Length: 187
Image (cartoon, one colour):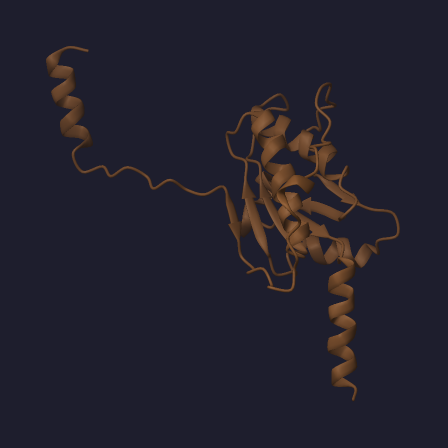
């Protein structure tokens, strides 16, 4: 780059401000103090499978419903009717980073009794695009979590085909809290 090019570049960039360091995870629901945190030495090993991957064609929407989950739950999730508790942004991240971040995100969501998650993976134009490879891995990885009861493509305001909603099972603690709340109302 010669001196004239540097001057032109400085002039062009004069009014540009750097982007703030954006967090990839947004916790929309604050955790309750009732939720006990396990000691750090009890953290689980990341069990998400790497390696060979069947690419999910872009024309095929991502959708999954665990055995025993009613169709109405998936329909309500697909329509974006559940309030989101947290989101994870995996845009332009290397696949291994996505794997690590997803695992950590899902473990934290479970600890905090979060039920409705949004994961942004991006949109690709071709089946072999990076965004679609991450999307295809997500289809595999999310089914490896026992707590995931359903997932599907997000509504346009949340990223459309570049994002998915994830519905988590209620934890045993959340079930007990619900029973206590309902028991108090009926007295």
